[in-house]
Length: 215
Image 1 (spheres, rainbow, N blue to C red):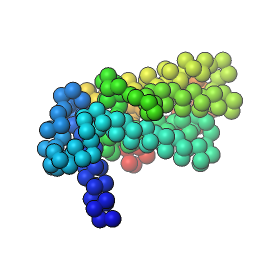
Image 2 (cartoon, helix red, strand yellow):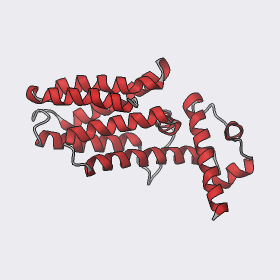
Image 3 (cartoon, helix red, strand yellow):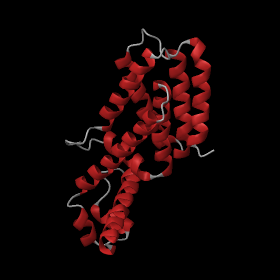
Image 4 (tube, one colour):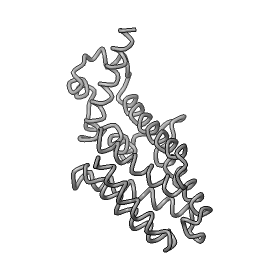
């Protein structure tokens, strides 16, 4: 049992070290030797868990996918309206990216041409599915205008969300991300939500920004 625990801890250490380097340097600019040095493990330990750098990338993207699904599932279980659940999911993912390198690295890998192989879905496909489903529910709940093209809105939302994080990575500290997501939602709410319901969701965006910053 102790040996298994140590092996799991070593694997987690390697993944976190790789994620940190992938996030800061990029996938192509990071070697397995770099990861060994950063993780402070032996090459044998790394190869025991991962045969190639691509396997590490897939492990990171799988963890990112699991985290996104878990957040979305938790929002569903709490009985929020569809639009609130979607907003809380985006802020939840953002908070994870502020707190640790794995979600940040997962995004960089997804935008950096790293192949995503079945059964793992591309994260953007997952996010599009979540956004489409929630926006359709929001239309039915009268929180989004009935004439909104749900597929187009979901695509725009995901592009906005991903783009905000990609641009922010180069220009400002990651701690700024919750504010950028709040700004995104303020624009989207004003474009999609009927006037009588806007104040609730604009206030919610500000509240969720504060929570995502740990305030």
